[in-house]
Image (cartoon, rainbow, N blue to C red; front, side):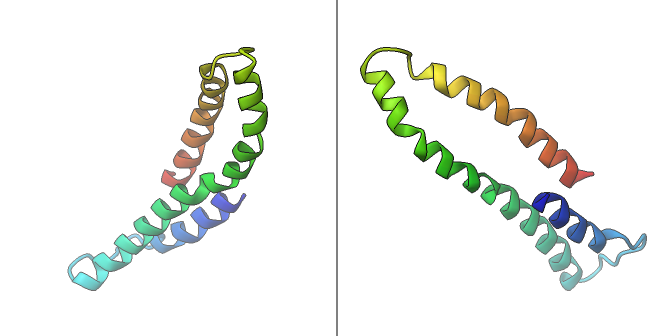
Length: 94
């Protein structure tokens, strides 16, 4: 939801059909919007960092007892995060 609100705010910057692009200040407006979107996507994953840290003791315990290999925990997480990341980026690009 936060990404959708942020994208709507940035999108309103480009609502005008004829935007000036002759001066350096005009370029700064475009670069500021792109930088804002890039930083928002970069720091969007910090909310999941706490959950990953909480799961570490369970991961190390099961690894030490040779229950599952490390890749058995990494691959499902990556597979689930790839579509979510693609949807977030497509919302921003749209």
